[in-house]
Amino acid sequence: MHISTPRGIRFDCSGCGNCCLQWPVPVTAADYERIRGLSYGEAEFRKLNSTRENLYQFTHTLEKRADGRCKFLTAENRCQLHTDHGQESKPSMCSLFPYTFMVTPDAVLASLSFASSAVLYNTGKLLSEQDEVLANQYKRFQQSFNTQTERWQNLQLIDGIGLSWKDFAELDRALMDIVYEQCDSETTLPRKLRSKLQKMSKMVTSLLPSPGAAERDPKLESRPKIVDQLLLKYLDLLYFPKDVFADSSYDLKTRELMMALVAAPEAVLLGDDNGGKFSDLIKLKLGKLPEEIEELVDRFLYVKVFSKFYFGPGFHHLSLLAGIHHLQYVELLFRLKLKQAIVNNRIAVPLKFEDSVELLRILERRITQLDLSKESISVLEILCSSPERAARVQFLAE
Image: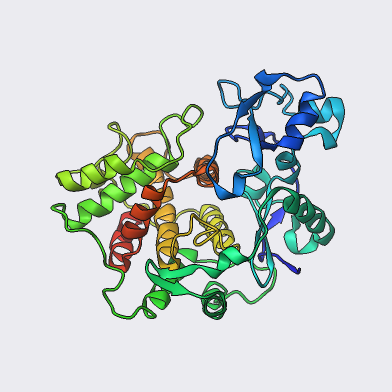
């Protein structure tokens, strides 16, 4: 099957070792037995009991140190397994990183993880120039992950309105035409993804049977803006926990969120109890971010849209509309975290590229590690489906 690559995206390993930080590396039964055979014991592993459909074949994860570093990472940021026993001794996931693939009925979509420093800085060869590497990495991917395309047959426009793959493929061509507006080269990165996501939302919304079909919020005492802020607060707790090294919970705090929605608070803090008030964040105007930061965010959003890692099998089976809106909230959260850091005097203006890199790395890692319950997925579907909410919150990012 043809491997399709995103435009303007580059990668060559920089040897930074950052992929071995905070990253719970899953290992297959074969990986586990191979590494155990190299005289390593149970202390190097942790039993994996994940319910995620794409991790069914993984039995353990590599153990971490207290600071989040892999136990096999040396002081020189090199893999001890690789150094002592060769590349083939490493877990298959490590050999694959940061390449990943989405298999659809029509194509294999190549992608990269933004947990990699080289990906964050967009250094190296274009993916479109890595045919042999991609072919070899896809073979590795096939050995470890579910590549069946049947799971793409049960898509939804919004919850309760089905969408066949054939109809989606036709719609997706129109959506990607929006993404590639003012992008006149096969190697040029699409830009202005924030506004293009808004256009995508409007296109999908126009296909609904009625204008209010996606407005399904339960009857709540909370004012709409408070509901908006509570959604962002709990997404923030999910994606930016207080201690990213120690927090191993990758599920939305659904019960807390629902109780907060019912309680109808007068004010909401972003994140935990020490987070900034939304009123303070609204007062601060970011304006246009430095060009290199805007370009980084565009790359992140574009890769998610291109590779279909934002809805359906690509993101916990959210509907197409909820997936587009969730991606908008993710981008908004990134900007709110920059605002919060400025308000709390953790970073200074003008913003530097390095101020944004670690934020996006944390965000990528958390999104990749999500293990959402059915209840959390249902709540996200309901709260993220609303076009009115998605449009209403955009001023928070200004």
